Length: 130
Image (tube, rainbow, N blue to C red; front, side, top):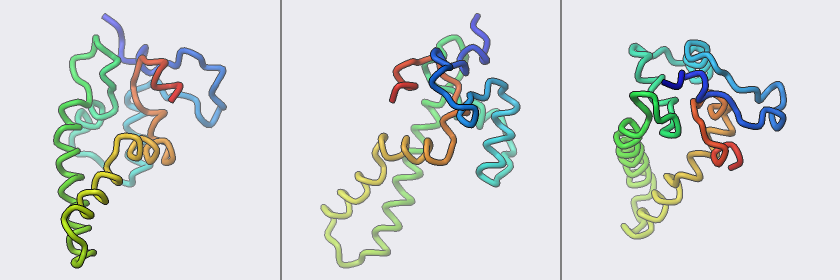
């Protein structure tokens, strides 16, 4: 069975600067993400799951089920925000605004911008390239 730490390693470590170096210890990752978010998780196992990509096939859990719920929660939050903020905008335009702000690419950019990517346990050179 592949250890969780193997999934955290980068296939081409030469591409990373010291500031971008991958965090391979799960406990260290959890603590660092909590500090970054300024939030302490009651159940850190959920955070570990959220930080585990499906490219780590030998791990029991990954973020896919949490993403299902998270996508719905973000969709509701942003829909409510746009609905209240723009009372004169029609439904089609509100849908466009929501879609533009909830795209996978946009959310991935936010994660990279805030330094969350280096804490994601993964085993995918394709993700690293993107």
